[in-house]
Amino acid sequence: PKSSPDARKVVFYPGSTIGNFKMEKVQQFLKVIHDIIGKDGAFLIGVDLKKDIEVLKAAYNDSKSITAEFNKNILNHLNEELGLSFNPNLFDHKAIWNEEKGRIEMHLFVKEDHSVTVDDKVIDFIKGESIHTENSHKYSLNEFADMVSNWFDVKKVWTDEKDFFSLQYLEPK
Image (cartoon, rainbow, N blue to C red):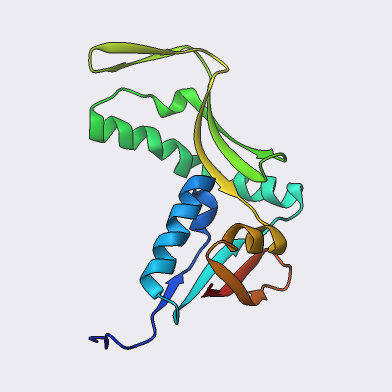
C-alpha cells in the first residue's frame, strides 16, 4: 500500500547480514538507514551474537558440507559470469574463527597447484594458498550497541533461548 509522507518510517533488516559488512561499510549503511527513517523512525535489525567457538565451527564447517558447497559456488559463479576455469574440486572450504576481529572467516584452500586465466593473464594458485571469500562478524550486545551509537540508541533487544541471535529495536539519535 502507498504510504503517507507523514507516516513513521520503520526499516526491518532481518537475518544477520550486517555481520558480513566491513566496519566502514557498517557505518555508511547505518547512516543511510538513519537518513531514510528520519528523527521519528525506527530500525529493527537481526544480529548474530558471539557464542562458543565450537558452536561456530560446527555451524560453518557443517558435517553435511552445506556451507562448503555454498562457499565453493563462488567459483562456479565466477566461471559462469566471467568465463573463468576454476575447478571447485581443487579447493577445500574452511571456516576459521578470528578472535581479534570477532568474526568467522570463510576460505577456500587450494588442494593442488591450479591456474586460471583472467583477461589473458594467468593467475597461479599454489597448494595451501587460500582465497578469503567472506567474513561473518559476531557481536556481543554491548559491542553492537557501541557500533551503532553514532546513529542509534538500542531501545529493546530480543534473543533466542541460547542467546545465539538477537532482534534489536533501534531509534535514531
